Length: 222
Length: 237
Image 1 (cartoon, rainbow over the protein chains, first blue to last red):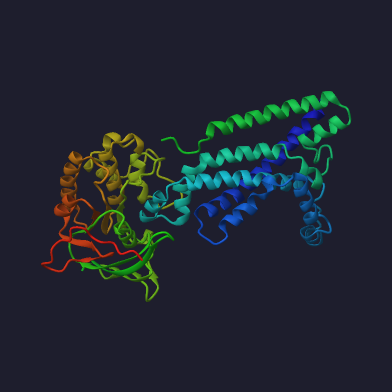
Image 2 (cartoon, rainbow over the protein chains, first blue to last red):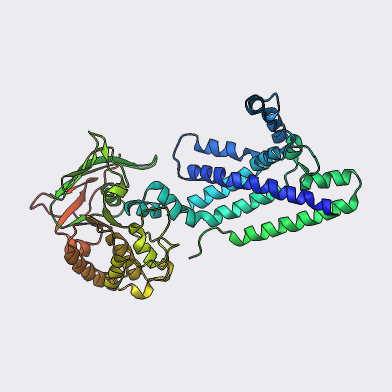
């Protein structure tokens, strides 16, 4: 049964990296959308939220076209660095990051919009640079709301199937994440393996949801 | 001359827009901008502080140009060295009183620690009678304590001028009287010029060494001998 834990470990690794990437990108984008005043802001928000509503396999197909050896980005990576992303765990990370991105984005934007701009003004008048205002006032007040989104994104990345199987396939030990492993086990009639995988997946998701629930509503309750 | 101000700014959204035009010179230690709510007083104060950029004109403080539309000068708020007290105090909710007051003395990317014990901070906490609540959070304080904390935070930096946005509006009348006296004494001690905006006639009487009236959508000085307008009019564009 030892090998049955591998999909869990792999999923945790993939989801961990995907969430770390989103933490930087989606929080940054959330801040820009919350504070920015530019034409097309809501359109940009909608575009960045698309991965949440698109069917994962469709998303996976787009990624395949983009990252495949003949794809726009994939061919460049292949020619310049000899890198082939398809069927690697890195591709699984990219797929998971993209589908989970809107979850962090929405939470981050809402959390930043919940920070009173007057507090940021007060910090400015007191002599702080814009980066200091962000790290000392905006982020500390918003972080709980952001974290709730991050946990949900982690759960989503953990269970990613459609896009993952398109770009990363199902290679045991390399790209066979939890959801993919469940699918394979059921297809192969390995019920006990399937049961085990489903159980640990359910427990993990419950744990993540409960932690996220404790953090929402996101404001510092002081 | 302490303040030499002459700027214009178009404000508002699609539904309601008006032209704010402010012109005054004041050598007074205490200047009051007086008029009804929502007429642009806060915006004027924000422009002085650098939190709002005028469309054109100039803002000069003691011969230093803070804003000059013609030559493109716009000193950012963080470099103007003014103390600003907001109407609802804008105390940082995630920091204690002591951390709030220490805030401006830290210029890095991290907040002062809870046990930070800088001498000017302790001096001001004592002067403002906040030592007992120094370890508490703003939500745990009374209105008067919050106001004093906001004042302390603004003053500990040694500002060149103090800008106050309706400092007593959030307090009940009895407390207002007491705080007026305290602020008066405080201003005498620190000897820093002050600009206060208010719609309370008593504030104007108490602190209005020079008073600017809101008149026809513009802030300016009332000509000598002219009667005080009873209902300032707002011109809507």
